[in-house]
Length: 409
Image (cartoon, rainbow, N blue to C red; front, side, top):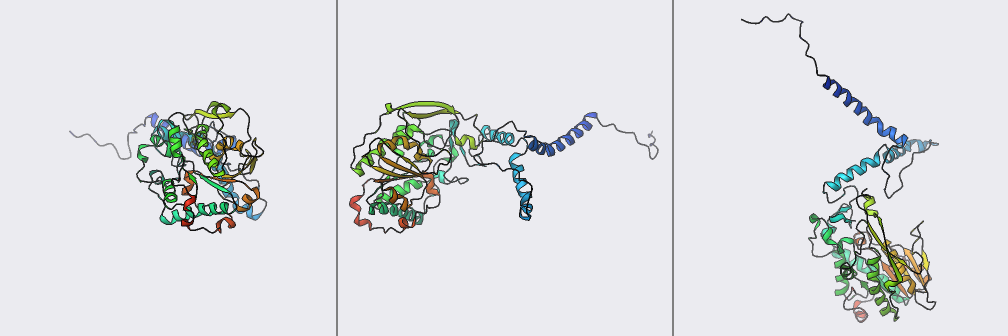
């Protein structure tokens, strides 16, 4: 027997469970909150995490006072909002922690390499990992250009009776390759530093380049010579290279300066994180023992805290000692307390440019040209015109003045 159909227009209502209705309301509320909380948070400064970005954050613009300011007002306001919306730093840190605990080798926003056992590395070329695998070598033309820059510097100094030493501190991954991620193992036979050292040797170049890698690799057997969370070598690393550099200075200048003994310094340690940990917002996870030396007899810093590019002049204990002119990057600051006291006067310029007029004004006996290995992947420095225009002599004329083995130490 068939059941009768219900009359047209009549249906039994199917009740929806209460949880579905509540879920929809909650989703709507969360959607609205997600839209407005960052805006309200920007106004109320809601963010439990402090920014550790190594830059000045954009500030909200004032009221526009000209037509040009009106046309740029929306861009300026949007830039300020991006830097200050609610919980911005907390979100950035949360994403970084996901990367850290997820085992990713590279922070995509900064290019910082997350290595083994808490080691962080700054790539030679940000967002281009070929350099770290020795897969971005110099072309023949690039190698010629770098050699010419160094030889122009050599001959400018030599023509004015000044000795020149080139120091290229290695990148941290060149000394601590074992802490690099396995997927970033070296594949190419030579790094750019290998290439420039080899080129100067086989061409009998007069450029006196000290390869510090063997010294640091030997020294790391006894002390850590680079910071784990920072891009720089520590005072142990700089001190290990100091006698090697001083030996070469003595050879060139005919002096007999003796390295300061380790007893002249008090080793100290604090717990902190370095610049690389700050760049990737892992300054809590990546604390380390921060090793440094404190000189028993204080020596002035070789850079200004307010402006590191301000030229600094230091004076040593011997009024009859030699004089020195140094162009350097941040690694050179670590050499200041070691090399500086040996010189009656030393001028420190944080720059990669050799300015001939400044050198001649300083009248040094020695010029030290220090720059980190990764600068070999940067554009060539543009020296002053009188340095660039210094004629290069034929190499056959100065073979006798070059060392058979560049790369002392």
